[in-house]
Image (cartoon, rainbow, N blue to C red; front, side):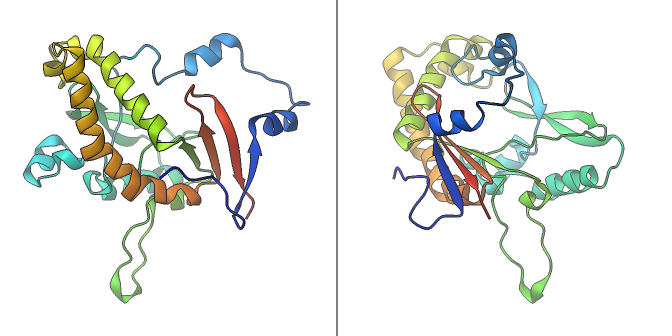
Length: 243
């Protein structure tokens, strides 16, 4: 399943870590050590107390539609709402509202919104944001989420590495955020390590691996920039679109 970033014919030009570093040798590095530390995320101290913008369908809808185990798959998102949000941002409208998603309760927070006021830069993060919609009949125009992007980045790694990261993250959350009684995953906090690993592997194989292979990985060639990470999370290869 592991695939190289580039083949003989590719729209991307690939650079090793050292080659990419040489290209920026004459460019001053403006980030401080503290700023870099603040940007770290996966497998660093993890908290699920935060809430973020989120266009996933509410759990009640996912349950009704039999989609709870498809959470994170393309069909689990409120695509019309996301497209309307991006359209309003692109049009320069004031106070554009986005729903709030809580990782702690694993659901959209009812009645809560975050207002986005004409940002200079908007970062849209998601597993399936480079997905293309099914084309309609009668040549009716349908926008893709990526139509609103000026630049897109795909974070890549070997499948075996992503699996390891997922299990390590699950075990770390079991020792931290899952211990909060309000956490949707609180039931996993008391599991012995062996059972917790088995649960994580089951979730990976049944849900996350399927989503990766069927939906996420096929969108990789559509990205403007592909950053390939090693097991240590260091970027080891960069592929920049040239056309």
